Structure formats: C-alpha cells, structure tokens
Length: 342
Image (tube, rainbow, N blue to C red; front, side, top):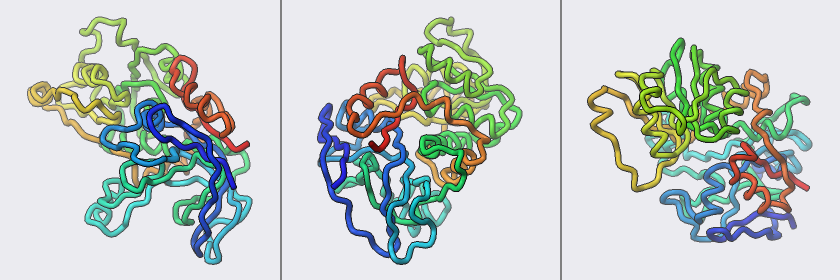
C-alpha cells in the first residue's frame, strides 16, 4: 500500500492508501521524487474544476513530477532500478491527424496525467508509488541535478512551447504578463531563444522579484503605472497570468503588427477584444501544453542552461498535501511548491 493525495471535489482533499497496478512488460514502478503543484491542480482543489474539466470522480492530481525507478517490467530497456527519471505527463495517441502532423499536444485522444479532461479521469502522480510506461521516462544520469529540478521540466516545457508559438524572438523585446512559475519559465525560454529584452508585468512584488532573479530586464507593477506607460513596449507578448486585466496589458503593450500568445487559462465569460486586434494587425495565438518541448526542457535542465532552482519555494512531504496546497495558493509566500516522498 502507498499513500496518495486525492481530490474528491472543491476543497475536499484526502490522503488515502492505494495499491499500484501490476506491471506490464514495458511498465515501470516509480517512487515519487518531487511533484510540483501547478495552477491547474490548485483550480481542481479550490473549485473542483479547471475550465470545462470538472472532477466527476476522485482524482489524483499532479502532472509535473520526477521519480526514482523501483521495479521494471520484463521488456524495459530504457531505465533501470535506482535511476532518477523525468516523467512526461502527455500520452498522445500517435496516430490521429494532429499527431501525424507533429502537433501531439493537440491529439484528439490525449491522455494527460492528473486531469479531469477525460472520464474515467487520467490519474496523476501525487502518490508515493505509481506505474508509468517506459516511453514516458527519461533517465537522468547527472548526480548534481536534483529531483526537484527534474520535476520542473514540464512547466519549463510550457514556457518553451509559448515562445515557440510566438515565432522567432531573436533580438526582439518580449513582454510576459504574470510572474508566477509559468511566467518565469517563459522569461527563461525567451532568453534561450535570443530575446534582446524581457519585461515582466504583475501586481505582486514577490512575483516581480522572482522574475528579475531568473532574467527579466525590467519589471512593472501594472496597478501602479499610468496606462500610457504600457504602450508599445514589445513586439511579442506572452500572457501567462490567465487574467483579463493581463490580456488588456498585452493589448496596450504589443506594438502594431506584433504577436500575442495566450498561455494562461481565462475565465469563460471573457469579452474578446477583436477590434483592437484587427485595427492594429496583431496576431493572437494560443499555446496549449507542450509537445517536443518537453525533451528540450529536460536537456536544458540537465545541462543547467536553465537554472530552475530559484523557483522552488518549498518541498513538503506527501502527508502534508493540504498544507502544501494552501501554501501554493499564497503568492506572497511561494512560487513553486513541491510534494516529496516521506
């Protein structure tokens, strides 16, 4: 038996014992290394839903995690017991038209861990032990790279995918709205892609300080500046806050002919600013999860071309899951809170 963090509905988080399923030939039994609490996990906890994805049965959250190999199936060759591994939470089908076009993140039959997007739900990784197919695992051989860092590969892949969706940012000014985990990952991703100048907007001082720590050239408290000070700041804006006010900032700040990439999840009642996009010939693009960028993120972390360590605010044992979720909800005290095995 092993301990699992399970959400039964809004504000109904329980710790329960469960038994891991039996291994198939290509399966691997993993022990939890570290599991980061993401914004979607917090929505499931607070509201019992993320947008249209509603918790309809008990859900184990957690889609950004690292693990340690415990036992391997009879045909496993990719990893061996005792190894640290990065875990890709995406299970695209590989055969639909989107997968065959190289856009697996848009797969018609996606099975994404820790999500209520399908029913029965795709159970996640906030559990002491769990089984994964070996194809989802990347062995990490660098002793100096911690389990906490490895667990940041998934959120880093979101930032990389957002920048990839923006097109070339080489030599350009990039604005990021939201200085949380994804916003900071977008800052580092824009830097990797050759952005000349990166600006971050937020209404939280701690978030702005963290953005500066990971490479932002300038930070702005948007609630403390006049609207005209936000005009024409950047060729590219990455909306990472999931806030209508942040989107309005992007609309003001993006220069004519520029690009806005929507990364954050907006409330369903959003009024869409079509006329502003039309008059200024802005390109408005979506960025949903990631695809090949997960592998890019793993390699960037392994080589420390990107240093995610400043973002890890706290690591709490799985037995304190509720405390960890409450800490993660407090942006004045945390950026990335992770759950770890006892």
